[in-house]
Length: 419
Image (tube, rainbow, N blue to C red; front, side, top):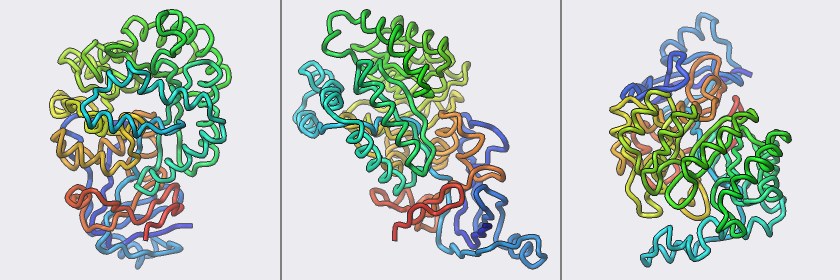
């Protein structure tokens, strides 16, 4: 069934002209059409002005089944959240309260909190409990405009429970109405039983866990937390080489807590993205520019744990492709709302509204190898978009802290109506 939207006050296409990602200052061109029109079925058929649409209706070129007037509305591509940890169990609000009293992320982790607190809860949880929790968070994300996302494991930290998490993600792929990519993150932290024999745990990841994940085809990517106090560059490189040999592609938690040259490792290993990057060096930026690795920035995490924000402006000026994602997780950034992430990006990382939209749509899709079919409103791509109850895309940033999404459409079907 063909549907025609007309009189769209602000139609944001993020037209990439065939590019799978957009670099640096070019991210400012979001292809806005004022008084726009959009023709689609399960895919985008045409975009243009309402005057052009009216002429096509009169001539018989367009014969839609339905015409919808979207005066005073904004339409933009659906958000692609390319970094989340929404499959988990337990609650860490007590840690949040400790941080408000001055405890650092590292101090809480050293007391058995942090990632390991969630590990204990996940190991006790059933797969059904993990699926239910992940489903509820994902549906909330959809209501806030997310139309594709990545979900990581990493709270099992042993073969049995990492597989359990990945099987929960697989079930979510089957039951959720949006595209999901899965990532194996067995190298998220070191489990208590390997606290003093870290290289032995790396052996377990490489010799047991990764082969099992690859054999069962449970993950699209392999990730590792290469940072101060976590995995060294050498340990990360060993894990990544094993993953590549097994046919998995790479993503990387990089330089979040300190500059350990993890961004350069991501570039050297041809990772699709390096994420966090709060302490990325100039060399890391240069290496990522040369490799084309996407810089996925997670301003919600910097906000939540009171850390410096990544140098987004420097990355953009150096010509990196920047993506934005929530990092939704129970400990260091518990939000599934991409609109909040856009606000943090423009205020605290000095990105423009246009750069933030590109980062949250097309470049987010590119970080998951999806930008050939989503992330922009171009003919032939999936009809994944959100209708916002604003007359301009800038209102999404100007009037912050509320949900501007009135409708969410995926593959031409309306999934959500927030009226």
